Structures are given as structure tokens and as C-alpha cells.
Image (tube, rainbow, N blue to C red; front, side, top):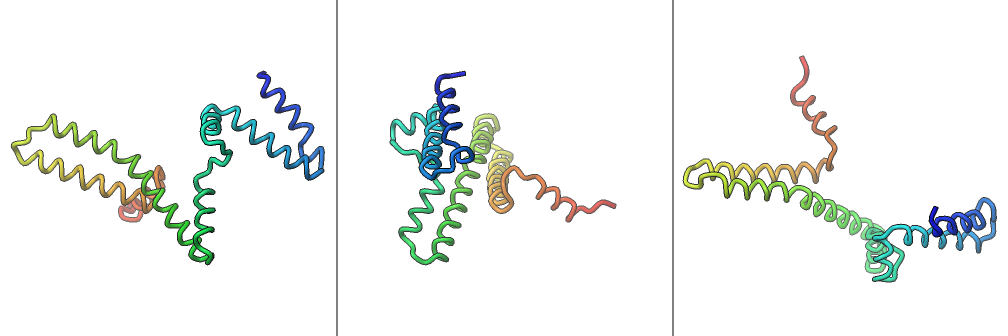
Length: 158
């Protein structure tokens, strides 16, 4: 067991809210827990060394910025929903595009460009990419349950 883990366990036993109900020890316990999480994760440790912050959640930071700019709660919720939607679309774009770019480059260098086959293949790559992005944005990523439901809805079993 590492020295860091040993000291963390000792302090967490001593400061845990169930064993020591004082408010100061609860805050100290949370600080010790956060420090251990940062020191135990190499990526978080580097981020803390560079930026000096312990808040690594982009959603929390965005929510705080939205609360500062918009005083109306309905506007805050609408802006946060738009932010989440945009972040989801960017993630989907990053997941989908490398595959279609690879497919396009293979088509570009491996298919004879003089015939109509090349044009049809490039058009089909674009259409399939467009439709996959739309489906992932509307129905989620990695959830094949939606596709199975569609399949049973449009192609019912006899």
C-alpha cells in the first residue's frame, strides 16, 4: 500500500462524518477526499499543477457562467439545455467523422475516378454520414434499443 493511500485512510477514518459529527471535520474530510482524488490520478494532478484548480467539471463551470449572465431561471435552463445539446452534437461529430473521412480517403485513392461509381460512392458516404449524425443526435449514441424498436415498428413479425 502506498504512503499516500495509508495517510488518506488514516485521515478519512479520523475525519469521517459518521465517526466525528463536527462541521469542521466534515469540511476537512471533503478536502482530504478531494486532495486524494487529485493526487491519485496523474491527469488531475497535472491539471491541478498547471491550473491550480480542483473543479474539473465543465458542466458546473458553464452553469455558473450562465447563472451570472442570465437572472431569469427559465432563460438559465434554456441556455444550459442549448449548451448540453451543442456539446452532445460536437461529441457525436467527433465520434462519427473519423470513420467517414477514412472511408472517403480510401475511396479517393482506391476507386477509379473516371466512372460514375466514384461519384455514387462519394455521395453515399456523405448521405450515410449525414443520416448517422442525425440519428445519433436525436436518439442517443450507442443505444441500439431505439433501432430495434424502429425495426419492430416498421417490420412487424408475422
